[in-house]
Amino acid sequence: MRDVVIVGGSIAAVTAADALRQQGHDGPITIVSDERHAPYVRPPLSKGMLKGTESVDSVFMAPLRADLDFRPKTRARGLDLGRRRVLLEGGEELPYDGLVVASGARARRLGPPEAGELVVRDLDDALRLRESLTTARSVVIVGGGFLGMEIASTARGLGLDVTVVDRDPPLVRQFGAFLAGHMTRAALAAGVRLVHAPDGVRLAGTPATAVLTGDGAPLEADVIVTAAGDLPNVEWLAGSGLGGPGGLLVDERCRVAPGVVAAGDVVTRVSDHTDLPRRSPHWGSAIDQARAAALALLKGDEAPEYRPSPYYWTEQWGLDIKICGRILPGCETHVVTGSMEEGSALLQWTRDGATVAAATVNHRMPVVKLRKLAAAPVPERTTG
Amino acid sequence: MRIIVDEARCEGYGFCAEAAPHLLELDDEGELTVLTEQVGQDERADAEAAVRVCPVAALKLAP
Image 1 (tube, rainbow over the protein chains, first blue to last red):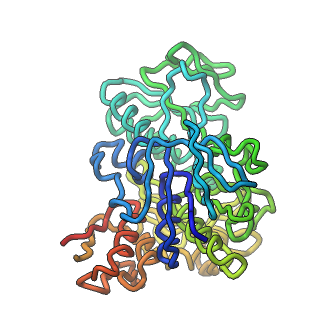
Image 2 (cartoon, rainbow over the protein chains, first blue to last red; image 1 turned 90 degrees about the vertical axis):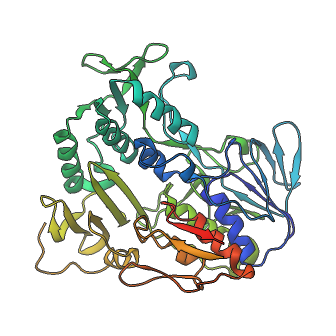
């Protein structure tokens, strides 16, 4: 293996490059990123940076290794698998022996570009929203998942009138009924208005000035934010035979095709739980997949299989929540220590008697321990 | 070159210790320990890789 091309400029791309070098690859590595910025971390974009407690400068990663060819503002527009070439906008072709696809995902939008809805996916999105929140009095957020509720928490903290609208109750899909119920009560206590729109919503106005639900009055606000999931960036692979609307399907070693591996938010893999392909767009997944993908590129079948250990976190309403495992539908919740009422707790979830997830709420614990608890039996004395 | 941990920022994710296990270790209490006080030139790239994977910017390299 000589020339490696990495498409993408975020944590999966950077980690893949680091892992390739750590594993001894000394050939040229070219990273093409369509962003104008140097690589930065995304988790603070909807948290500390949006609040203003973290500076913009603090989101940038330490400078990349000098032995990488990092090309910002460079967009891949095609892949020629047979000739092993990444086709760039502008006509240049990058030959590769190994390709890492880390092209990520983008925010899903409800309206056409002229609707002007705000999203939070990249640094420029977050800067725009931060600016808007400083002058606006009201915000409607479409989407009650992690991102939507983190934005709601920040906006409320800034004193805005905040409405969150979703077709599902907030956070139930991510947290299960018990924890979602608690977070919903915290949001309501903070003064957020939650609107249930089972038939979905539409934007009204150009630029958007209101959100229309199936039946209720228009939800008007100075700022409309869409936080309704993301779409994997696979369009540039059209015609290559790789990738579909659900992402780029990888095997158990993050491989896609001969000489091609993938990592991060663009990746979809068959879930151990459901046998259905799904993405896991989290910081930890991007890092773990990038390391697995780099090893697979260099060692093929000799590389260890990628074993997902889902790990993700959120901060909202003064609660710092960290989760290992997956809180599946139909799980039973166990409060192991503390209580939600006290604002600090350790939780476990079981399904058919087996522990499938564990979480801390304002409760500091090493991740290694939390990982173990995500598969460890629940102490008998607990109830939930 | 030294690795500096901002203990107030570190939340014990452990991604850094996985990136550079010979330089950093997360103990059972979730405290991050710097195993090597002075990072040599040959270890610098690994130290930088560890700094990059921290989602809360709790690690820095200082001369």
